[in-house]
Amino acid sequence: MTDAVDPPAERLLHDLGITEPGEIDVEVIACAVGAAVRYCRLAVGDARIVGLGDRAIITVDDRASRVRQRFSVAHELGHWHHHRGQQLICRGAAEQQDGAAGCEREADGYAAGLLMPRFMLEPLVAGVPMSFDLMHQIAATFGVSTMAAALRLADLHPAAFALIVEEADGRRWFRRSSSLNPRWFVRSAASDMSATADRCRLPRANVAFAAPAQQWFLGQGVRDAEAMYAIDRVACGRAVHLVVVK
Ligand SMILES: [Zn+2]
Image (cartoon, rainbow, N blue to C red; front, side):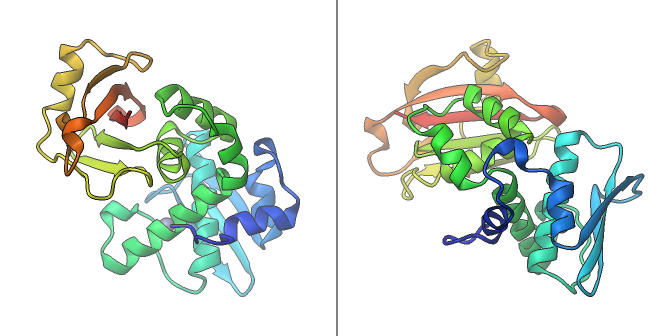
């Protein structure tokens, strides 16, 4: 995760005089810290970085989407900042063990801070309710995937909400926003999310409905709360469920 105070990615943006989302050019930023970016076919993973002294080459798979390429470059810059000199293979935190997973999360946090810095994002979301529309708007503004935008909003949006993600292979994981009551737990055996969506015929965002919060959460006081629920199907066959506490 990014540092709580003066995170390094945002400090770099300040140092480079970057103040607008459209100015976050990852190749230029890489060049400023001694890393060249090249695009070609990679047999393993989306990207890698090889460094020698204070110079590095970041190689990114040229078949990936542009938003994925941008995140990959920013992720490798996270390794360049935090893990210089270490041998790492980027496979995503979920597929790594212990220390390596920690490095991957740290690089992802750096990437999120570089591509969606707090000082640019917070003014855009101030007073705007959490929704899939907001996720898509942030994704378009900052040139990132909807999933990356959703996870960054979980860190920075003031609303209390949970994202429950169902991968195409059936794995399910969730992310809670920083404002969600820490004593509330997302129900691991919540009513089948896809079935709920199908039953309610919610193929896309913009269709949300209110329901008792205890349908998705367990914890003290949850019985008195209501939540708004919506589902969106994003890239890679994922279904994302958004539950916002009212
Ligand atoms: Zn990595």
